[in-house]
Structures are given as structure tokens and as C-alpha cells.
Image (cartoon, rainbow, N blue to C red; front, side):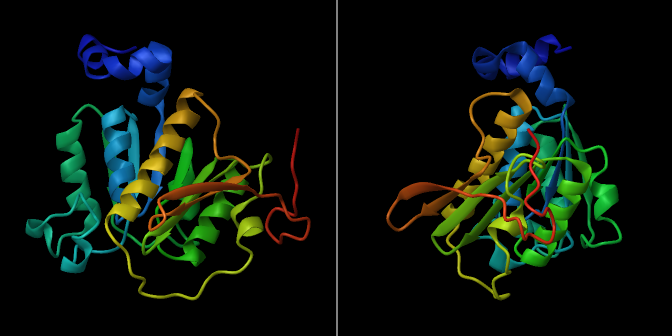
Length: 244
């Protein structure tokens, strides 16, 4: 149940989806993979929305080159593990939620444990091998995955619902080459907030998800487009399997 302080804090949201929706947020556990350009705005806005538990995982430390876009990390945080820097800001933003910050590499040895018990997986990574691993764990566990990626002024979002939609490897059967890519700080802000919005919609049951759709943001043209994405029968991960 919400207490009086929570009813006051979330009053404007309760006008949208009622106390029941806010209680769903309070009970939710969200695993965010990455505490960088995408992970920072995702974690911040889910924290202030009242998501009860945020699991934040990242292996990196704060570098000066991060500061143009990773809004939870500041000059004073240089050299600090990103998850610790982010955790401190998130606790200040909303002391009533739980933050579980883990400074480690996400790999085959620990991904299953990180996903266990989560209601939602949010992909805030910068490489496709880890994204593919998260996709497989989402399919195995039946937990939805909200994918986001950025480059320069451009970005993309898709919500993967196991058994209902194309999986990530249906949409992107081949990983793009690894690179140190250019990026302006507004791009992860826009894409990260769309991902956070998808998470809030999924948890509360509001609106229509980007399920079976890929959203493309072109920042230079200031356009948003969505494209239908279908499961691939030859997908080596899900085999195009869908359930009614």
C-alpha cells in the first residue's frame, strides 16, 4: 500500500493510472544493464517514477569523456565505478526505493542470476554481444526486454515480449562492427526516456508498447518513425516461435 508521503510524491502520476498503477511501480523490480549514456536517464526517471527496486549493473568507471552525456556522473566522480556514482544520485532523487548496484561485467556466468526475479530487463548497453546475451536470458525467463541503441544524432528502441514478438536477433541477425562511436548527449537522453516510458507503460498496463515495432529517431531531421518487425522462422534463438 502507498503511504501518505508516496501519495503526495506521485500525485500527478496517480491522476494518470491510479493508485493501483503506482502500487505496481512500487512492487516492480527492473534490471538495467548499463549505467552510461542510456542507463543514466533510464535509471533516473524510473527512480523518480517510484519503481520499487532498480538493479543497475556496469563494469566501468567514470571517465571525463563520459560527461557530455552520462548525466548521473559529474566531474567529482571521475575514477569512481559508474554504478556507485549513479547509486548516490538515485538515492538522493528518491530515498524510498531500493537500488542494487553491481560493478561487474555481464557475461554467461552471471546473466541468469541478474535476471532472476526481475519483472523487466532494460538494455542500456553499447555492444551487441551483451545485448544478444540479454535477449537469450529474456526468452529463457519469459521477462520482456526493452532494447535501446544510439549513434551520433540517431537512436532506436524496441520492446521484446517473449512469445509475442520478434526477438532481438530476429530484428538484428548480425551485430554491427564494434567501434568508439560519436554521440551528442541529447541522443541517449531521448532514447533513454523512450525506454523508461516503455518500462512505465509495461508495469502499469498503460498505452501500447513498442511490441513488434522498431522505433527509429533521426535527430538531425527531428523525425520519429516506427516499423513493424516480424519473427524470423530461421532465427537461431527463438525460431520465430510465437504463442497466442
